[in-house]
Length: 122
Image 1 (tube, rainbow, N blue to C red):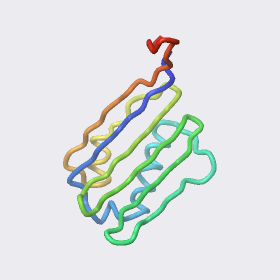
Image 2 (tube, one colour; image 1 turned 90 degrees about the vertical axis):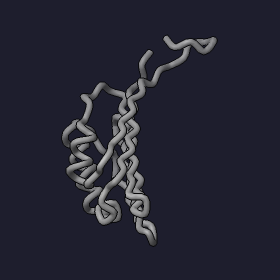
Image 3 (cartoon, rainbow, N blue to C red; image 1 turned 45 degrees about the vertical axis):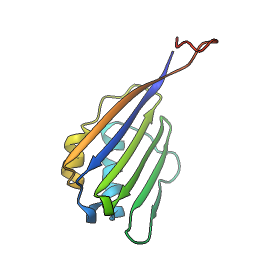
Image 4 (cartoon, rainbow, N blue to C red; image 1 turned 135 degrees about the vertical axis):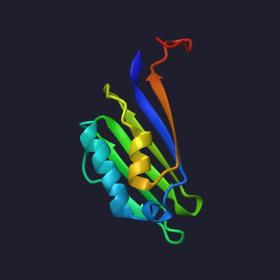
């Protein structure tokens, strides 16, 4: 039985200033949430770390969660979106290149499943 889909995204070669800018990352979250018709529960949590200034964001969704972690010192960002309801694929590569200046974007998609007794997927 499929429980949902999880996307793990690694973006590299990003603009370090964008990765340290909470407002830019909030814009990325807003775009993902709006484009995929996701529903935020409560407030999105954001934290900016001291030098080199990476940012972590976490949105609890009625569909599960959206998270990001940025590493300006490495010009890298990671995103994780888990949805327990079917959603279209979001154009991660195009959007992260446009919004964060990413040079390369690796998107891995996993179907999450329930296991039957004995460990076999249904």
